[in-house]
Amino acid sequence: MEQKTKINAENGKQEVVITREFDLPLELLFKAYVEPDIIEQWMGTKVLKLESKKHGSWQFETTDAKGNVVFQANGVIHEFVPNRKITRTFEMENMPFAVQLEFLEFQQLTDDTSKLSMHIVYRSVAVRDQMLQMGFASGINMAHNRLQDIVRKLK
Image (cartoon, rainbow, N blue to C red; front, side):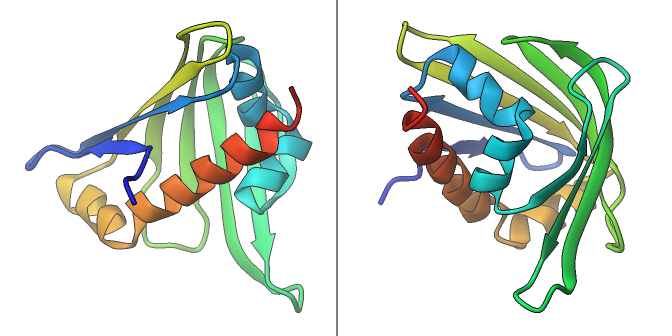
């Protein structure tokens, strides 16, 4: 099955560009990235903090069935333009990866379709390559498929 989320990772560069077209109006796609209850559904994680504004911050946490923390991430929002863009940092806690910089751009294609473009910059080519080897592509495709299914019901 073809993956709808496209990942472009050029050899020798410390970045990836991710694009995905959604069968969702622009406003709903943007909400999926800024509304805690929607994020929790499609990401399968708990939103501990989300300040959707310039100079805001965020913190997510995922636990297993026994309540043990298995994933924690946080960051700072540097730019926030509703329905257009979010620039933020992303850092996984208790992991050997350096903080990454993410540029998210949201674009309306038609009244009922929109596009997300993510430009992620890593500290080094080696870190970027390590992330890609960890199943990053299939994971983001699964997450975006869930986003599409969950948010479509909000129409």
